[in-house]
Image (cartoon, rainbow, N blue to C red; front, top):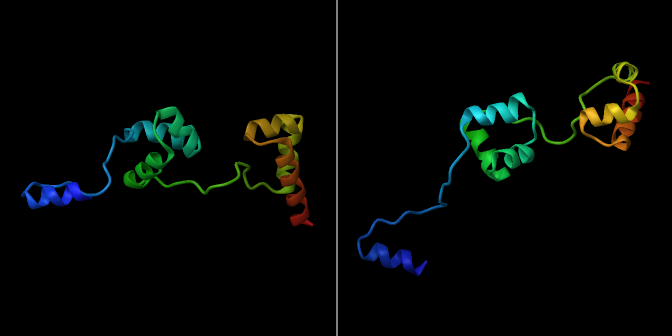
Length: 116
């Protein structure tokens, strides 16, 4: 802090605040986050930025963020049974949604419990 005060006293213009770095282009961010549906962390890794930079860029560009947590869609127990019947095993369905089989089973239990 002493250096800034010295520069101000000398009549030099001093930049304040956090230094701003580069942001990803809006088109790339829309493609990766919105169209591909990647989470912020994975989008950041793919684009070569930090997750905080991606989050700030989303706000700056006016791109609506998805709610955090869980990748499973809100399905009814009947809808989930249909998805399981169509896709086959629970392992295939779990891998499609990017969750573990245990998480999928927990979701099924909760969905069936809420419907009864």
